[in-house]
Image (cartoon, rainbow, N blue to C red; front, side):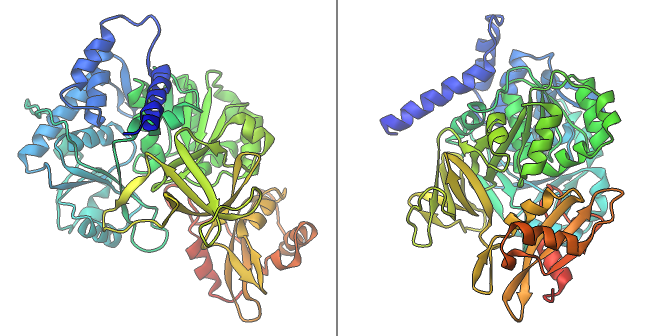
Length: 526
């Protein structure tokens, strides 16, 4: 390790300590936590063991079943791990986790990793054929699932463990022996087109990845955080792991409901809310009386990631909740790349933020050379937490020691602006057109509640834009008026040839718009 790497890791350690060390803490707590972590190492099991030793009576998870303390969570995880190990789960095996947000997910995740097995987080939106395909592709031998998914897992070529069976494992008296080396934690890509790919992340730079978030976002030890983002998704999982690392209380609900989320924030006096943008939009769409009835004066951070935030949503959130919004840009593969603070978003609501601690971000042209500020190019990211490759052996394109994010973007005054996916850009009549530019413009129209713009084939121009719009409640939006709005603000070749009104946009469980579904509805003829 180079001197620069050692220095960066030391700085990262200081940043993490700032958010996890409690002033005037009882002097025996921290040594006890370190002693509990030592047999396991600085992995997830070790982190939970340390939290349980440090604050055994503090609530770790609060879900529909009530509170679970750190002591109880660690005890349950050890028992489940022993039961899984007795059934053949361990190094060289792979466990799939098909669960919604609740304490069972957390204990099963900790337990499976503690056995030394690899763990694949499965999308709760999978249909049976897609689940079977992923189980086979990832070599999953055991699937732990919520009871509601019994029809989906039926017929799988794998052992299945439902909630009752999991409770049975937790009732055993056995404990699993400490294992410093844990298996890989594998997160699936969104899979909006084709089979989702498993992305395994290295663990040697974990402290720098944590520091990248904590350096910019004021998360504190002992916070109460509502994690609404799904735990099988990289952002929801990050929120959970950051919470355990700082001995926070994490409030979970199996299904997202905007009114229930706001009520939970008020009831638990939440300091932090972790969401994907579509959840934030649904909270803001609530009747104002609902928000007034559930005040949350303790709220210090709303952290949003997982898909594009959009300038209108950023502005409305800051207006409603004050300067508490943080927007994180990254992906399953590259992890966190940039973070926008409330000050950044007030200055430029469309920004993805500034480069995070320990990360390099460069905008490159098609030859792999850096482009000047303000010029759109391909976004490449380097950092200690980027993934180590897909489980099928593939990887992402690399240039200059950096990994492609798959996005197009530009830097302006040190802030990154993302102009869309590389494969979203179209060439219409010889002109490069970025759908996100039109999408962003239409999102600010007073008649528009939600919008997606995609490129579709066209015999005359090669490709043209098609807009899919969800009108605001009580509004009868007019397609030609929206086209005229674009014509008044942008070049003529950026005007959508077709505007289609929908009740809602098709999205995957993490809130990303399924653009391929929209393209298919046009059928290639705008």
